[in-house]
Length: 425
Image (cartoon, rainbow, N blue to C red; front, side, top):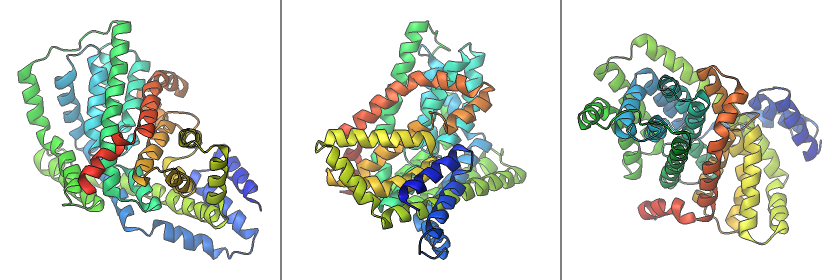
């Protein structure tokens, strides 16, 4: 079997609805069986793919996000954001973005943001008279901030695949995440002016103080996680464990909203999600090994560098490839497969691996907002009880500021590299 048939088989399996992990492993096994490599290589490569200490952070960050949603922490965050920026025109749109920025420092997953905060945000915006399409659109777009601001599950996967410092990757994503938030809030302000949105509530200092007091311990979560990592008190994996312990403490002891039954249910959900993620990582590692052993990274580098010797053109081509793949492939699988192929090209034209990691993750987050995969859109269409196509049309305008931020992050490395250079280098 040639490499062309390998890719054809993979995409045929994905298009007919076979789960990504099974499609990757199945196509890889068919390729291996057609050659002289022992089939045992499949099991060997899958085990090696998940045998990594940094990957321990994945289940703990997933558990932390699930605990925050179950323990009522997300509601306190939303109410604080409402008191803080709800007085602005289009206030609940700004609240949506602000709450996502805060929640990003806890869970690191766009789907967790969309599923947890999304239900609260969309209901509040509907009750306040906002169009459902607008509510779903800003909720979907703001959820992509989660994996950019630390902690970030895709950054952990990228760090493992690229052998890059996860601490530096976390630091690199902080400013781009804030830039995304500002861009989305500017878009909300544009819609507010165009459509005549009113202020949702007056600014009352007493209400802000009360909501801050209720949310204070919850707001300490990102401080503990991010501060611990950046100061060197925690490794990313240890920070994930600390986040889980703190979330359990808040839910069970302080707020008393986390019962034993809820904890068991959350644990089951975490095990299920983790199993899916690690199965994708293991299957994608086989596929990536086949590409590497057949010199696909070298061929891709030669092809891209042969198309142009201009770094700007090459970066645009890489972004285009990542955006297209993100439309069809799950984030973890895309990182595991594409990074070994594209990273050598990026390094060859002078892009730092940490900077490239933010570019990769930001591109793939846009894929969560585009069909046919569009996982965030599927989640929010169920939350809002609207068709997938309507969720897509509501989200489409917010892709404009996100793409502009992607280009800014790609071609202005200082936005990404200033903080990791200041802290680590």
